[in-house]
Image (cartoon, rainbow, N blue to C red; front, side, top):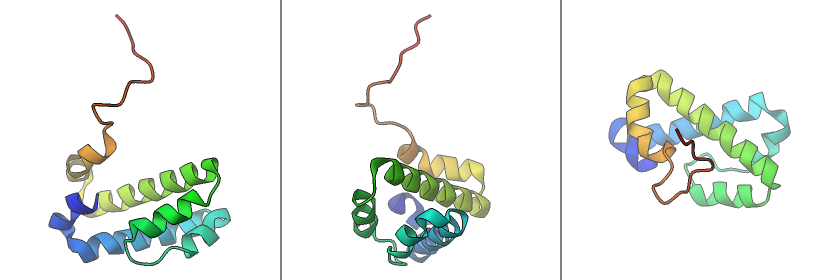
Length: 106
């Protein structure tokens, strides 16, 4: 996401969106506020990974989902839904090597 967005909103813009996403998540989900507080304000994926591996699987999934959804929504308010979807298409789509969880036959 960082690489896709830096060209559009700059490195500082991406970091600001990340920080704001963390703040909004902490205020909306008090049970995870301590987790959010332990992350640095900069866009540090290593620190985020360290926090996630310390959580239970359910909390890590919830934390990641809430953070990514909040980040996506904030970005959409800045640049619009179509450009957001286009820029992040490669991030949200499953890779070609992933097997589908269920195939629908005609």
